[in-house]
Image: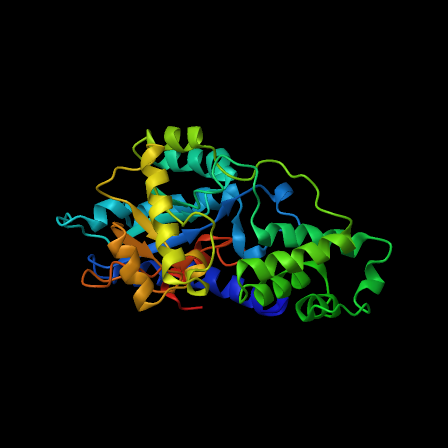
Length: 340
């Protein structure tokens, strides 16, 4: 969406909200339906530099507005409550807050706001990254592209032909940095882990290597502290955050088993309820069966939509939320309703 389109949507949503249309449409939603919101990071503007994908974050002040708006209009439930056999009757539709990836900033910025409004949330952890200094390949790629762009030879890099066709396509599609990062991530998401690492190694040679970054993910101590609040539940996002449709069944089973065991070992979950979230939202009928067989209680996708009581609990739909599409209450409401 171009900037003109964005601002038209921005003011149209504000008008719909001011006219009471958003509230009336929310009130018309049957009380047994429920939204599951998908957040990733809550970070201040100074941390949201051009290497952070726009679809990955919400500002703390915006998240505060979200919880104030949602708490009035919805029954804010936990994923565990809605997965139980007995669900209390409510007058309002229900809403569940989830976070993917277990970023450190959840503890620093999201958790205090959730406590302020006493809103429960579920955080899906890629257990191999928690308590480590590891970094997702997407963030390493963004760092490398920024270094290449800012280097003295950055403008000439795109004309260099690489023997690796993926590297060549990345270098020859250089545009402004955010668009370049977005293009390159989407290009590599279709590849297996080993192939991605090969591309990153070649880009690292051009960029002069990786820079050591500060810790990006939660520690297990922070996980247990949040869990002890009785507001925050945790679930699995596999071990290594690999796209499951790229893996064979044996590797998937190992990822599911080891992640579940780690969550139990670290006392981050109660064994009777452990939710799961498909990395990048990719799954199949077979993968759903493997998740269920591994002992998970429910599973979230990235498919947009509202959920029904009789729906597939191993393919829960979610509404992805990020700053641009939810900068004010009207935009958030319209995003939930799918009306603009």
